[in-house]
Image (cartoon, rainbow, N blue to C red; front, side):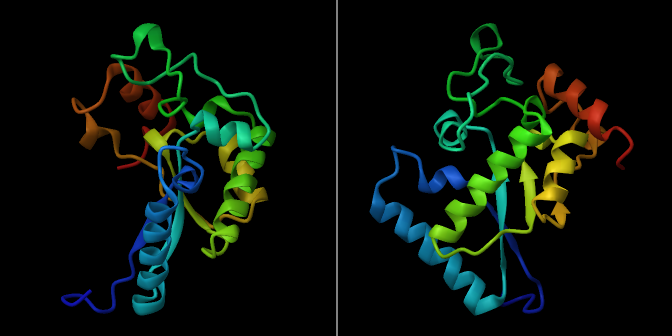
Length: 169
């Protein structure tokens, strides 16, 4: 901010930051205060970053999907936490429930309603984008230049991203 005072940053924050039983209230308050300070001081944006973690997905009233991790070292492709499950595994209506729940968590923590999002693993598909439109999101930063990521990702994730974002350069 000192070097580029006109630059506005977007902090993509997971809603599970405020629902994760492993984080104590003091840590949650510290994160919330820091985000609000950056917003108030610099005009920075607080956006949503979403991995469909089970404790959060269940809070949204849905059954968590755990059967298709995009990380190769997950035993048999299973992710019992839901963290490495693609957002694209959830239908348009399910994803709308997920982002609506995230919005309510942000609002309850004084962070306002986010309008920018990035999917964990860059795994949005067309159904997710329709849900985002319905949920009044304006920006999806999930598009990935797969050519630049080649060789850095698991083969499963690289294939998935090429399928979704193969035309982005």
